[in-house]
Image: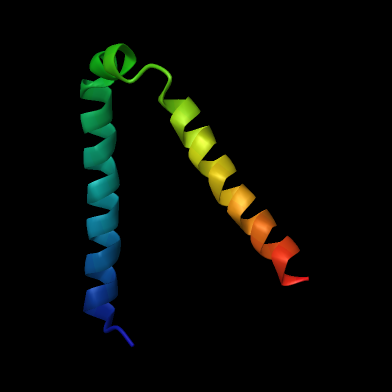
Length: 62
């Protein structure tokens, strides 16, 4: 499916991307603590909404 060169490039790109994201996150950590307080609540609400949709789908299928 992929040549060996494409796989090597993909792995190297992924590793470089993850390292760049770690550095960028660490650099902006102080700003994240100020401006993004409570964002985990939004994530929990979104995941709960998805779970509710799946439960409704399962119950309406029967």
